[in-house]
Length: 169
Image (cartoon, rainbow, N blue to C red; front, side, top):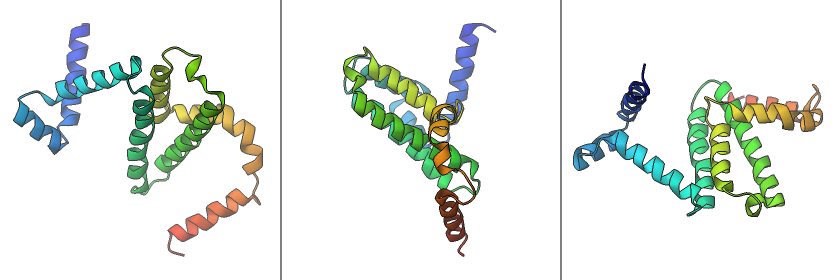
């Protein structure tokens, strides 16, 4: 399979996925621009702004909050706890990263900082990569796990109370 065939396969797959959104279908009818090309163009423009630091901090933080916020809300409305754990882990890692970033103020030392931060946040957030779980298990859990483990811990008691409230007692 050639590279052009693979790209066309991805474009077709993205078009099928975007067809689920009526707003994009209406936009395609009104403008006669295929929705897949409009989305790819907007994503490219968004990334261009980040690379050249035209609102890089705003756009990077927007991606770090909006995409995970959407998935977190979606997870709250599902019955499974797997996705809840995934997004709770993301928010814990994101919080640690944000505090560390503000303490170190690395943006002045590192060229293309917002480009790397954007890619890092996508890696953390997107379920395909499970980056937040990797960071949590590699760094945060070893450092702070001893404060939250044990059957008599406050965290376990709080979790039990939260579960009982969620079930309607």
